[in-house]
Image 1 (cartoon, rainbow, N blue to C red):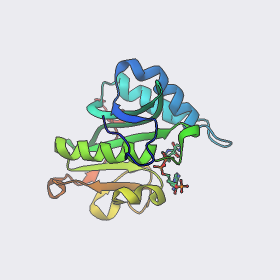
Image 2 (spheres, rainbow, N blue to C red):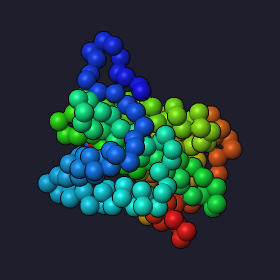
Image 3 (tube, rainbow, N blue to C red):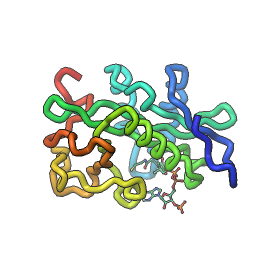
Length: 182
Ligand SMILES: CC(C)(COP(=O)(O)OP(=O)(O)OC[C@H]1O[C@@H](n2cnc3c(N)ncnc32)[C@H](O)[C@@H]1OP(=O)(O)O)[C@@H](O)C(=O)NCCC(=O)NCCS
Protein backbone atom coordinates (compact mmCIF):
# COMPACT_ATOMS: atom_id res chain seq x y z
CA UNK A 1 0.00 0.00 0.00
CA UNK A 2 1.18 3.49 -0.79
CA UNK A 3 -0.15 6.15 1.52
CA UNK A 4 -0.19 9.89 1.02
CA UNK A 5 2.34 11.95 2.94
CA UNK A 6 1.82 12.02 6.67
CA UNK A 7 1.39 15.76 6.67
CA UNK A 8 -2.15 16.54 5.53
CA UNK A 9 -2.81 12.80 5.39
CA UNK A 10 -5.90 11.97 3.41
CA UNK A 11 -8.12 9.08 4.40
CA UNK A 12 -7.25 6.91 1.44
CA UNK A 13 -4.46 4.63 0.26
CA UNK A 14 -3.36 3.14 -3.06
CA UNK A 15 -3.31 -0.63 -3.60
CA UNK A 16 -3.56 -3.17 -6.41
CA UNK A 17 -7.11 -3.70 -7.67
CA UNK A 18 -8.77 -7.10 -7.28
CA UNK A 19 -11.76 -8.75 -8.94
CA UNK A 20 -13.86 -7.87 -5.88
CA UNK A 21 -13.43 -4.15 -6.70
CA UNK A 22 -14.90 -4.37 -10.19
CA UNK A 23 -18.47 -3.20 -9.62
CA UNK A 24 -17.20 -0.25 -7.59
CA UNK A 25 -14.64 0.58 -10.26
CA UNK A 26 -17.27 0.69 -13.02
CA UNK A 27 -19.47 2.98 -10.93
CA UNK A 28 -16.49 5.22 -10.20
CA UNK A 29 -15.43 5.45 -13.85
CA UNK A 30 -18.98 6.30 -14.87
CA UNK A 31 -19.25 9.01 -12.22
CA UNK A 32 -15.83 10.50 -13.02
CA UNK A 33 -16.34 10.80 -16.76
CA UNK A 34 -20.03 11.76 -16.87
CA UNK A 35 -20.45 15.44 -17.62
CA UNK A 36 -22.77 17.86 -19.35
CA UNK A 37 -21.46 16.85 -22.78
CA UNK A 38 -19.96 13.41 -22.08
CA UNK A 39 -21.68 10.18 -21.04
CA UNK A 40 -18.70 7.99 -19.98
CA UNK A 41 -19.79 5.05 -22.15
CA UNK A 42 -16.41 4.88 -23.92
CA UNK A 43 -14.39 4.81 -20.71
CA UNK A 44 -16.65 2.22 -19.07
CA UNK A 45 -16.35 0.07 -22.22
CA UNK A 46 -12.55 0.36 -22.19
CA UNK A 47 -12.38 -0.94 -18.63
CA UNK A 48 -14.90 -3.75 -19.20
CA UNK A 49 -13.24 -4.85 -22.42
CA UNK A 50 -9.74 -4.82 -20.94
CA UNK A 51 -11.02 -7.07 -18.14
CA UNK A 52 -12.90 -9.40 -20.46
CA UNK A 53 -9.78 -9.78 -22.61
CA UNK A 54 -7.80 -10.53 -19.45
CA UNK A 55 -5.34 -7.80 -20.38
CA UNK A 56 -5.05 -5.79 -17.16
CA UNK A 57 -1.44 -6.19 -16.05
CA UNK A 58 -0.85 -7.79 -12.65
CA UNK A 59 -0.22 -5.05 -10.07
CA UNK A 60 -0.63 -2.32 -12.71
CA UNK A 61 -4.32 -1.84 -12.09
CA UNK A 62 -4.58 0.28 -8.95
CA UNK A 63 -7.30 1.70 -6.79
CA UNK A 64 -7.33 4.36 -4.12
CA UNK A 65 -9.53 3.27 -1.25
CA UNK A 66 -10.80 5.31 1.64
CA UNK A 67 -13.26 4.34 4.35
CA UNK A 68 -14.15 1.18 2.46
CA UNK A 69 -14.93 3.04 -0.79
CA UNK A 70 -13.03 3.08 -4.05
CA UNK A 71 -12.30 6.75 -4.76
CA UNK A 72 -9.79 6.39 -7.61
CA UNK A 73 -8.70 3.91 -10.25
CA UNK A 74 -6.06 3.57 -12.95
CA UNK A 75 -5.69 0.72 -15.43
CA UNK A 76 -2.46 -0.37 -17.15
CA UNK A 77 -2.62 -2.88 -19.99
CA UNK A 78 -0.37 -4.12 -22.77
CA UNK A 79 -0.16 -1.78 -25.72
CA UNK A 80 1.05 -3.43 -28.92
CA UNK A 81 3.73 -1.84 -31.08
CA UNK A 82 4.31 -4.18 -33.99
CA UNK A 83 4.45 -7.22 -31.72
CA UNK A 84 6.44 -5.53 -28.96
CA UNK A 85 4.92 -3.91 -25.89
CA UNK A 86 4.55 -0.64 -24.08
CA UNK A 87 2.32 -0.03 -21.09
CA UNK A 88 -0.95 1.56 -22.28
CA UNK A 89 -2.79 3.42 -19.53
CA UNK A 90 -6.56 3.92 -19.80
CA UNK A 91 -8.38 5.31 -17.99
CA UNK A 92 -7.42 7.30 -14.87
CA UNK A 93 -10.47 8.28 -12.84
CA UNK A 94 -11.10 9.93 -9.48
CA UNK A 95 -14.54 10.18 -7.85
CA UNK A 96 -15.87 13.74 -8.26
CA UNK A 97 -16.04 14.33 -4.50
CA UNK A 98 -12.39 13.33 -4.12
CA UNK A 99 -10.82 15.26 -6.99
CA UNK A 100 -8.12 17.90 -6.35
CA UNK A 101 -6.88 16.04 -3.27
CA UNK A 102 -3.90 14.28 -4.83
CA UNK A 103 -5.62 10.95 -5.53
CA UNK A 104 -4.94 11.02 -9.29
CA UNK A 105 -1.33 12.02 -8.69
CA UNK A 106 -0.79 9.23 -6.15
CA UNK A 107 -2.27 6.63 -8.50
CA UNK A 108 -0.21 7.76 -11.48
CA UNK A 109 3.03 8.10 -9.51
CA UNK A 110 2.66 4.61 -8.04
CA UNK A 111 1.71 3.13 -11.41
CA UNK A 112 4.79 4.57 -13.12
CA UNK A 113 7.05 3.42 -10.32
CA UNK A 114 5.68 -0.13 -10.49
CA UNK A 115 5.84 -0.17 -14.29
CA UNK A 116 9.49 0.83 -14.16
CA UNK A 117 10.25 -1.91 -11.64
CA UNK A 118 8.48 -4.44 -13.87
CA UNK A 119 10.77 -3.39 -16.74
CA UNK A 120 8.28 -1.72 -19.05
CA UNK A 121 10.23 0.64 -21.32
CA UNK A 122 7.51 3.27 -21.66
CA UNK A 123 3.97 4.15 -20.68
CA UNK A 124 1.57 5.80 -23.11
CA UNK A 125 -1.80 7.44 -22.71
CA UNK A 126 -4.24 9.77 -24.38
CA UNK A 127 -5.06 12.75 -22.20
CA UNK A 128 -4.56 16.36 -21.28
CA UNK A 129 -0.90 17.45 -21.54
CA UNK A 130 -1.62 20.11 -18.94
CA UNK A 131 -2.32 17.37 -16.39
CA UNK A 132 0.09 14.63 -17.42
CA UNK A 133 3.26 16.63 -18.02
CA UNK A 134 3.75 16.84 -14.22
CA UNK A 135 4.40 13.08 -14.25
CA UNK A 136 7.00 13.36 -17.03
CA UNK A 137 4.74 12.61 -19.97
CA UNK A 138 5.64 14.27 -23.28
CA UNK A 139 4.22 14.14 -26.80
CA UNK A 140 4.76 10.63 -28.18
CA UNK A 141 4.88 11.39 -31.90
CA UNK A 142 8.33 13.04 -31.89
CA UNK A 143 9.65 9.94 -30.07
CA UNK A 144 8.30 7.64 -32.74
CA UNK A 145 5.18 6.32 -31.01
CA UNK A 146 2.01 7.08 -32.93
CA UNK A 147 -1.66 6.52 -32.14
CA UNK A 148 -3.40 6.50 -35.50
CA UNK A 149 -6.79 7.89 -34.38
CA UNK A 150 -5.09 11.19 -33.43
CA UNK A 151 -2.01 11.08 -35.68
CA UNK A 152 1.67 11.80 -35.03
CA UNK A 153 1.27 15.52 -34.30
CA UNK A 154 -1.30 15.30 -31.52
CA UNK A 155 -0.11 16.63 -28.14
CA UNK A 156 -2.70 14.41 -26.46
CA UNK A 157 -1.06 11.08 -27.19
CA UNK A 158 1.81 11.07 -24.72
CA UNK A 159 4.63 8.86 -23.55
CA UNK A 160 6.44 8.62 -20.24
CA UNK A 161 9.99 7.31 -20.72
CA UNK A 162 10.96 4.64 -18.19
CA UNK A 163 14.45 3.35 -17.36
CA UNK A 164 14.69 0.99 -20.32
CA UNK A 165 13.27 3.51 -22.79
CA UNK A 166 16.28 3.21 -25.13
CA UNK A 167 14.99 -0.31 -25.83
CA UNK A 168 11.39 0.78 -26.34
CA UNK A 169 9.76 -0.18 -29.61
CA UNK A 170 8.82 2.56 -32.08
CA UNK A 171 5.82 2.58 -34.37
CA UNK A 172 2.04 2.49 -34.28
CA UNK A 173 0.55 1.80 -30.83
CA UNK A 174 -2.62 -0.24 -30.47
CA UNK A 175 -4.56 -0.67 -27.26
CA UNK A 176 -5.49 -4.24 -26.30
CA UNK A 177 -9.06 -3.81 -27.49
CA UNK A 178 -7.80 -2.70 -30.92
CA UNK A 179 -5.57 -5.63 -31.76
CA UNK A 180 -6.99 -8.53 -33.78
CA UNK A 181 -5.96 -11.12 -31.20
CA UNK A 182 -6.97 -8.83 -28.29
C1 LIG B 1 -8.12 14.21 -14.12
C2 LIG B 1 -8.23 13.52 -12.77
C3 LIG B 1 -7.86 12.06 -12.91
C4 LIG B 1 -7.24 14.21 -11.81
O1 LIG B 1 -7.31 13.54 -10.56
P1 LIG B 1 -7.24 14.41 -9.22
O2 LIG B 1 -7.12 13.45 -8.10
O3 LIG B 1 -8.35 15.38 -9.20
O4 LIG B 1 -5.87 15.17 -9.47
P2 LIG B 1 -4.81 15.67 -8.40
O5 LIG B 1 -5.48 16.04 -7.13
O6 LIG B 1 -3.71 14.68 -8.35
O7 LIG B 1 -4.29 16.95 -9.13
C5 LIG B 1 -5.18 18.04 -9.21
C6 LIG B 1 -4.61 19.05 -10.16
O8 LIG B 1 -4.62 18.51 -11.45
C7 LIG B 1 -4.96 19.50 -12.38
N1 LIG B 1 -5.96 18.94 -13.25
C8 LIG B 1 -6.99 18.13 -12.93
N2 LIG B 1 -7.67 17.77 -14.03
C9 LIG B 1 -7.04 18.37 -15.07
C10 LIG B 1 -7.26 18.39 -16.46
N3 LIG B 1 -8.25 17.70 -17.04
N4 LIG B 1 -6.41 19.14 -17.21
C11 LIG B 1 -5.41 19.82 -16.64
N5 LIG B 1 -5.15 19.82 -15.35
C12 LIG B 1 -5.96 19.11 -14.56
C13 LIG B 1 -5.37 20.72 -11.66
O9 LIG B 1 -4.31 21.63 -11.79
C14 LIG B 1 -5.48 20.27 -10.23
O10 LIG B 1 -4.94 21.23 -9.43
P3 LIG B 1 -5.93 22.04 -8.44
O11 LIG B 1 -6.38 21.06 -7.42
O12 LIG B 1 -5.06 23.11 -7.94
O13 LIG B 1 -7.07 22.52 -9.28
C15 LIG B 1 -9.65 13.64 -12.15
O14 LIG B 1 -9.96 14.99 -12.05
C16 LIG B 1 -10.73 12.92 -12.94
O15 LIG B 1 -11.00 11.74 -12.71
N6 LIG B 1 -11.37 13.65 -13.86
C17 LIG B 1 -12.45 13.07 -14.65
C18 LIG B 1 -11.95 11.97 -15.55
C19 LIG B 1 -10.79 12.41 -16.39
O16 LIG B 1 -10.84 13.49 -16.97
N7 LIG B 1 -9.73 11.57 -16.44
C20 LIG B 1 -8.48 11.85 -17.10
C21 LIG B 1 -8.62 12.24 -18.51
S1 LIG B 1 -7.18 13.08 -19.17
